Image (cartoon, rainbow, N blue to C red; front, side):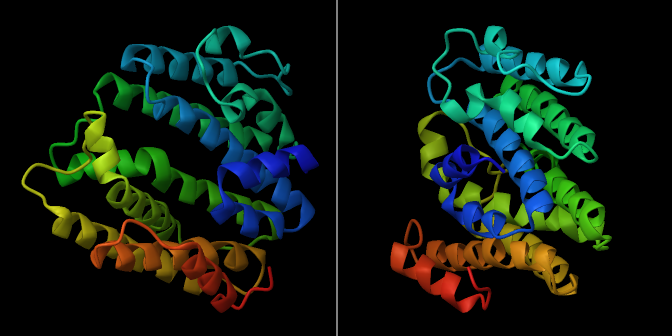
Length: 268
């Protein structure tokens, strides 16, 4: 994994930088590639000023470009798609992240990225309208549960580690549900809510906890090794964040995060 890619990973998410940076080299390249690809399209979906119609067009064109890939992507292959819009560096370097994946697993990462970009385009077209828990399940699968499935495939590819794929969906959904709770007010300010009709923060908290139970079961069942080591910290941080929000605080303090890292038992 190139150092500049790891540096950008650290800038975009310290939460995932720690466990990714300590994976074995080939698995580190695969997981980092997947994470940066997903982050690249997530920044398109979440862009604060670009119109939804443009977002959906960009995301669909990204999906189509990835689907047309034949082995490697030219570093400027997505420039026309991004155009003159002010997307962040992690998005503009999407071709590099796609190329970062080891050849034997790269097509799975490309497929996951293309499929997610297409699903994100759908949600942008519909202004992320959530009416029911069914809709919320669809959204959280689109952008996170499917990532849990990708991770399970990466564990199996690396060393044959088996995992419960249904619980893998819960792992992704649980982490996403905590993010939705944490960002609820910010989302409202841009005219978006992921809260089903009739729900309050209480129901959303219960939804997150149900899925984090699956995430805990997923992680606990993994054998000792890099897959388990990777999952422990994001899960612990999500659980602690949920408890912190319940107590009326917006997020974990830096001191709390460092304490959680120390208590995971993993030597980062």
